[in-house]
Image (cartoon, rainbow, N blue to C red; front, top):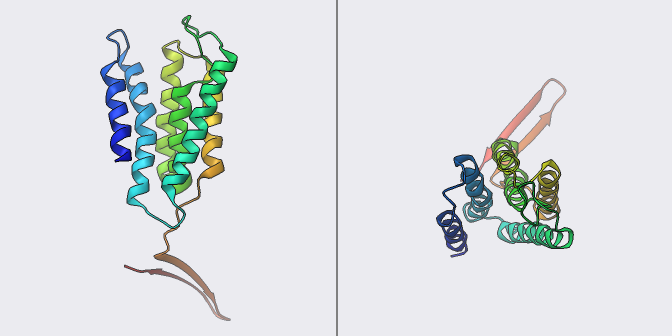
Length: 177
């Protein structure tokens, strides 16, 4: 149910996109939701004792709340003349999702997620919605929020054992189904 709500919000955001927005900007708008939605969906597929859903919820909520509080307190003008530029909410959202994925599942998942999140930041600068400082602040908030709350996923069914004797070393893997 929670995932459906997130996808509904994504649909609402996409349905209100302006015809004046470039395909780049639209793709950044979509990715700012897609990365955290992927992170949230992963908590259902890779259940563990450390409650990844709550880790995601705490990390994402802290990041987004911090961003919107700072936006209202600072009220920096956008490069295109709008309000509330600092920090970038799109970038915070994307990097919060990317950092969750990297922390939980490692760099194999994290590198593509970070590349996509970086693209979101690029689209915000290219569209003149933010400058580099806004984007870097969003990156920092998104990363720190996830670093505070997210634990790496431990597959308890897979173990690695190392043995040493006088004559040789032995590496053993054990996987339980």
